[in-house]
Image: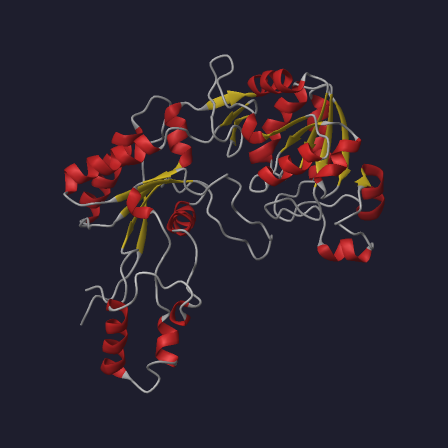
Length: 397
């Protein structure tokens, strides 16, 4: 009988990472120790991945509320700033908002509705429909919003983010005004200086605002792109991908990750003799069916990966073959026919009926989602994930 086990994803424990730690050495040794403890053999095309958090922690890539305030004030002039399309998150955005507020005299927050970009809902679709509100054209001020919808709390966190964000801004000494709209141009009736806080739609939002008369138009990816008073920074993503570290600091998305993954790949090759792929991963890309939250709040799933993880899957749909081309076969004959079909498949199955229903996503996004679910976001203590058999198919023995 052939091999009965396919893909295996293992969480690997690691020490608590501190600034200055050798992340390449720690990840490599942790995986080698796990293999020895569990008596697991390495194979070519294994994947070793680590959370972006431990890479950033080792780099010491942090900045403070005051650092953010300094950068915002320098780039916007310290007067009124329109903050549009922020996600609703204590972890992801609250500390950033404090820094923005400290760098301005007034903050006009424009929230998208019924939900933010990643699916956190201010209100339900049913509530919006019931009140006859058109999210494509209606601009609501705070009083109108409260009159229509009252004080709605987040499904999971129990937070009224409208109230929470207003108090954060005012607690930093800035005036706060909140409006609700989905057209970026709505903010220009309040200020021409805009900080757009959306993640995956930011390029379009900036383009629309500039074309409509925005004067200073920047995104979170333009704040903290260089060091402020010795702080951390990210030249590509700025504050995007940051997480709360303390009440006054955020951990930024890691930088210079390619040297990390290449270094780990080389060390594992030396230790095992195998060609192992390596990646850094952040949020996975998947949607929660209850809370409606699309997990991907990082600018990318994988900020760095080795070359063998480039591309998308090239797979046949086994149930399609079994129900159509080989519908008259059973047992060993069916098994062999499908195996032969896999062996003979084209190098590019895009558009072919036999691949319909397979997952047309990048390998790094698929594997990153698997890693994120494996490692979790709490106290599992497994920021390293070791995957085996991901590139195998039905013919592998």
